[in-house]
Image (cartoon, rainbow, N blue to C red; front, side):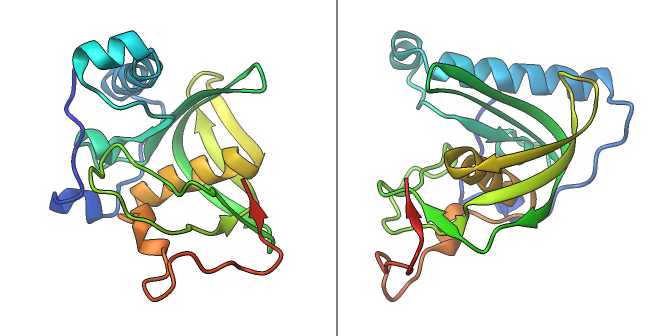
Length: 179
């Protein structure tokens, strides 16, 4: 099992390298291990026993590998949202913004950073989907959009609290969607 890289580690602020396709066995194995980690982290009993925090997304830099790879796994409205992506790129985003009213969190960030993180409510992403074994275009809205953008930020050395207004962390953006 890997160790989650914390936000005081310099490599988390570095841009990740593109991944060559076809995917190597090593990269695919790492992605599947990351996906398993997310699933286990959401099992309250397992998480408590192993002292790990629950997560819905994980980017390769968070496990010490600076490659453009990420996984997302959570249940929403009795539906599983799952992505295992390589070389994801946001190709379009809405003008309308959204934010989590509880604020964002991160497995790599132990200290709370209070405030709103505004992100486009809708994004279109192109990536290689490891589970489908092909290039895909994903159109995500609301919470899924936030999670994808959060993980893609990791691939660019950006942490969620970089987006929080330092002067007025709870500033309300007009016409933004609260989630």
